[in-house]
Image (tube, rainbow, N blue to C red):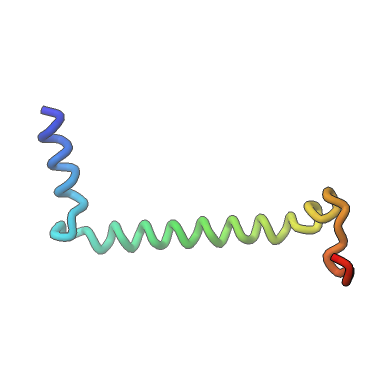
Length: 62
């Protein structure tokens, strides 16, 4: 019974499935959204990170 469910789930996401392109597009879009959000969080928090480790990024010695 579990083998049949696994086989059906595998067939649902195979390249032959008619909605495969939409699943791939949705996954790619969601991944890019997550990357954008993560990079903006890191960019905003960089001054606090540098202050916390007592590093001046604009200093030529660093």
